Picture 1 (tube, protein in one colour):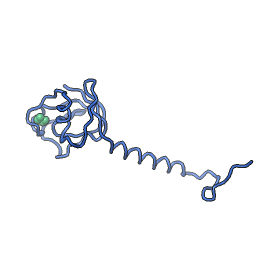
Picture 2 (cartoon, rainbow, N blue to C red):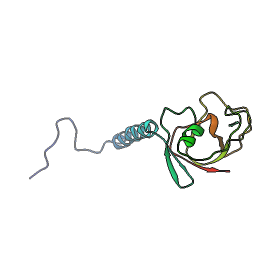
Picture 3 (cartoon, protein in one colour):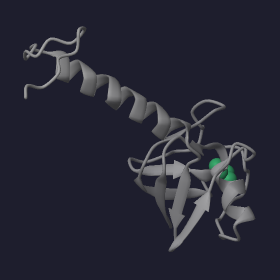
Picture 4 (cartoon, rainbow, N blue to C red):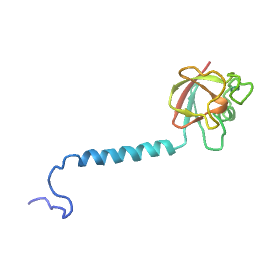
Length: 120
Ligand code: FES
């Protein structure tokens, strides 16, 4: 018995058809990754950072993770931690305090993906 053929899809290999399909899947997956609530991994804890928090610092404080801070506004650098994995943004613009490669300021940043940080 032969395989039934779809009237819309020919039984031939069309170059690029699979690639386009996978590309669309990848875009959907990337969008859902960005839309899910980011999780912060820190000191063996997993902290969910919902949209109610204005910063990573406040999210961590609610989870009883002790992070150093002073100005809470991106000026002093006291809240600097090492970003091991993931991406953050600075919703109010780039902070004035020095931020080295692989570091973030928790008082004025928010995660856009799951992140892993190390407290300094
Ligand atoms: S607490 Fe001052 S820069 Fe974050």
